[in-house]
Amino acid sequence: MSINQTSKEATPDSRQILLAILALMVDERESRVAGQSGVRRTELVLASGGLDSAAIAALLNKPVGTVRMAILRAGKKATQPPKDSTSA
Image (cartoon, rainbow, N blue to C red):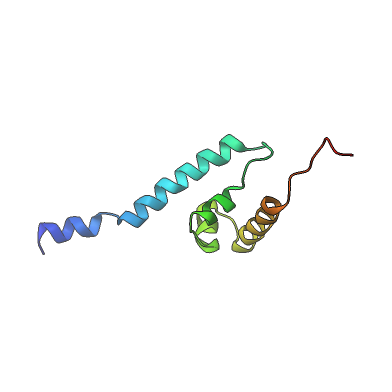
């Protein structure tokens, strides 16, 4: 076994590294926006970035069904026209 083979086996692949970085960023965002209204749900942000529900659930440590429902609800909320407080 060569040195290159040994170091290759011990090094995480780029996908694992990117997922770890994304998990840290998600955790920071969740802490920062906690309790704020009008902020896009993290699930919806990640879904719009191309991640599927299973990957998002793994990152957020939530059940897949919960993530799917959050994406569905956030998507519906985003497509509703804003309420106009000036009209009566």
